[in-house]
Amino acid sequence: MSIDVVCTGMVFLDLTFEGLNALPENGRERWASELHAAPGGAATTAIGITRLGYSAAVIAPLGRDVPGRSLRAMLDAQGVLCAGPESERTPVTVVLPFAGDRAMVTYEPPATIDSAEIERLAPRAVVTNATQLELVPDGAAGYATVGDSEAGALANHLPPELGRLRALLMNDLEAERITGMTTAEEAARALAEHVETAVVSRGAAGAVAVSRGELVTASAPMVEARDTTGAGDLLVAAWVAGDLKGLPLAERLQRAVVYAALSVQRATGAMSAVTLEELEHALGELDPVSRSALAKEEAQ
Image 1 (spheres, helix red, strand yellow):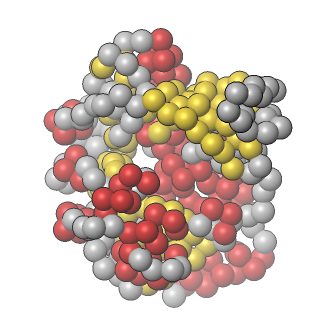
Image 2 (cartoon, one colour; image 1 turned 90 degrees about the vertical axis):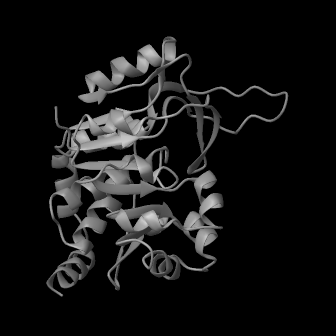
């Protein structure tokens, strides 16, 4: 068996309570207009990968409990292979979208991943987090993401193994925390001294990337945010898909930013991942200034 992309890390059952008019205070109850159950975490990236035309698997501990059985069924329906391992209990996150952002509460039992489970799938690429670089097998393109907990660890030490990666991806707050820089551009340049390509997302402001001394920027289209959950995971999915396709740096970044922006218009992370056809249509709708800048960067 051979898979295009293996996504490692935790997979959560996301329970999204949509339509809140306020976040709950201690001792108070708030009512949601909708409840959505969807895969989260590494599964969001995997679903994005499949909707962009590549095969994907998740290597993540899923429990024998009801959330675990539900996640396996959801991922199977999306064409994502669940390759283990099996555990007793499954991570669960409650997502509370409100005022253009969201609050979350997560239960995450301890778990480990064996690199042999990844190697047997012979992936072209592996997406992992920046503290588990040993999970990327020889011969596979490696992409690492950073969360809040990883940013704290990396602020004290950037491992030399980052040099094996195709790209390191994170948001501006994480990048500035790691590097001590005050802008996304400065942080991306500092990170690119340790990795082939550093990508720093800036939410509604788009993203920047630095690769071999070249800096490119991409702006995000104006959209109304319904639920921002998983936008960063889907940016990673589109970046990896563009890299596997061999697209130029500027085009890769623009596609990733637009893909992430499109997702916030729908509820949940994984189920908001649009198809390749929808992405191509949105890219065609970019304003003339954005298209001109992208064409200029590609020509350089």
